[in-house]
Image 1 (cartoon, rainbow, N blue to C red):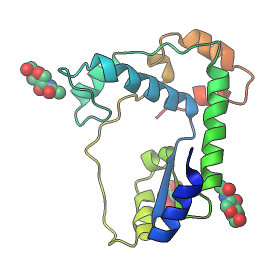
Image 2 (tube, rainbow, N blue to C red; image 1 turned 90 degrees about the horizontal axis):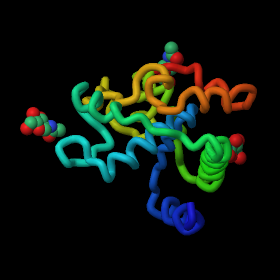
Image 3 (cartoon, rainbow, N blue to C red; image 1 turned 90 degrees about the vertical axis):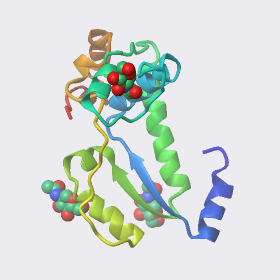
Image 4 (cartoon, rainbow, N blue to C red; image 1 turned 30 degrees about the vertical axis):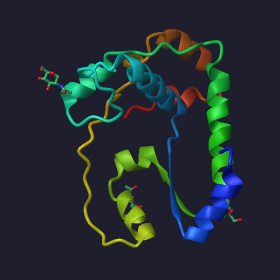
Length: 165
Ligand SMILES: *[C@@H]1O[C@H](CO)[C@@H](O)[C@H](O)[C@H]1NC(C)=O
Ligand SMILES: *[C@@H]1O[C@H](CO)[C@@H](O)[C@H](O)[C@H]1NC(C)=O
Ligand SMILES: *[C@@H]1O[C@H](CO)[C@@H](O)[C@H](O)[C@H]1NC(C)=O
């Protein structure tokens, strides 16, 4: 984001194709970011920090940590995440790119065909060994969920509470 002009230039000169993987639900993104950041130091899986796991046991261990979200700043943090995402798409809009939503990918594996076509690689049915860590309602993943829910009421971000995947 800091050196976007030079990077866009480089991407164009080198013929780089860009995949933007973005998440609609920024509150869920926040849970992932905070948990990941916690584990960077806590290293709960036998002293190894992992951002992605391949078994439900590992996923359960990682999700046992529930982040507490700062109620005083998180609305601003959400707004900032949103602005950054808009800015990123804007900066790199003139590169050859595709925008992929995490939520669409979770619900519809066929989306991966769009990616393969974009990359010009042979189309295959792709699967992932990754196991999702924060599944189910956010109530189970945020320590101070009640406060966060009340703060979100009536805001543009209220819908983030309801989606469950
Ligand atoms: C952690 O250690 C336990 C016991 O030694 C082992 O069963 C488990 O597979 C290890 N987990 C990881 C993520 O390495
Ligand atoms: C990128 O530019 C195109 C064409 O100018 C426009 O239609 C599109 O909305 C822009 N996308 C973003 C994310 O700015
Ligand atoms: C799934 O994704 C494919 C590829 O983008 C699209 O053609 C199809 O309509 C999607 N299906 C649903 C149910 O959204």
